[in-house]
Image (tube, rainbow, N blue to C red; front, side, top):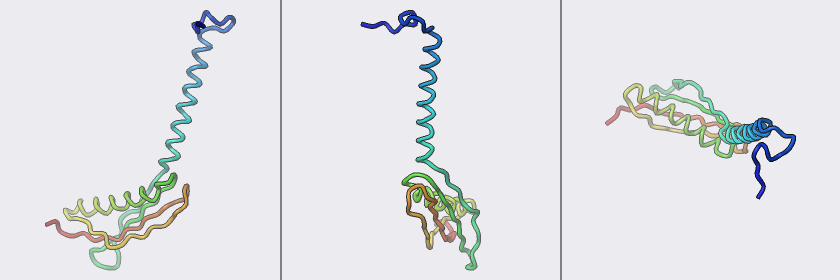
Length: 120
């Protein structure tokens, strides 16, 4: 059995091996964080705007990165529509949704038209 203590390898101080081990772990950690970040990507949304029809509104969202960017864009737009109506004591009702972007690592967009209705 080989002993891997700092005194077992001649000419290599224990602190250098510890630093090298920490450096390798930090590089591995950084690589894992970057890999996760590339899968998550980023998302943004526009402000809710009133449309020409009274009581009707539109909000758009976009997301990039990963295979599920379209789902993040959709969810962000839907959540914003819901939150907008809930802040007014109402509930949202989506009338139309337009989506674009199908390629991985491209920008995916979702535009939602909705109305706010009283809660029953």
